[in-house]
Image 1: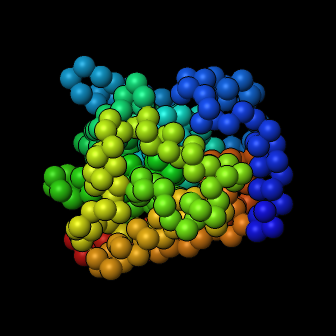
Image 2: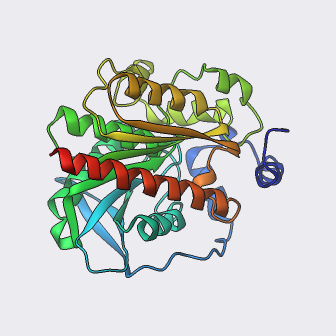
Image 3: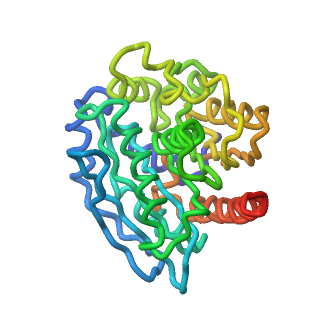
Length: 316
């Protein structure tokens, strides 16, 4: 583990003392994390934070958390999807990072609590995520926001959902997305890249744990080739929003994230991509351990979307 920065190495030494998550049931993993007391972190100041229920189908609602920055508005928008392998995670997981995104980018951030596997397997999390995007677009004025400038983003499984809703919006002539922010995204379920071999065990997100997540999410093995699960397998990646792709150096998902960035670039999409050195999967929502790395990533995100969305607006 000589590649790791000291914070990551210390974190993994503690994390690896826990039971292997892939040996547990989904609810047991949720219960395990619920036992840990919340860590006190300094939260970014905002004008308002509000939880709301929104409809995603005729008979279902999900929760969203709306972060409004200081200022008059109307503000541009950022729809955020949390990580957790489509199985764990919630609004609290991404709370500190979403506050900082809203503050730093001066956007209304809408964090989406989509329904999760195994209770709600694919395509329910995708459908919820897309319905939330539509709701944000349709209700932008009530949020003191601008529906013509929407960024989608998320970490890990949330990065996957961000990539997928971007494809769906293109394919269904849905809400206009100005940019997509993909933070160590899942883009395939093949589990066979070089980074999967290099970091298969002991780096937080083990290969077997990622397979555990994937098996809970999909209904059948052939689902793993569905482009709305594995966007890296899509034949057509043209006419998608500009993309900012962040990968972590010591992460099984690193190479598929880089591969997706390269595929987007080859399809003519504006892409900015970089790999955070010495860092592990999950850093972006771990404010207690990696605050400086998170701040640096969000600064890069803000710079990218400010530039790319201005270009997008000018071209419309």
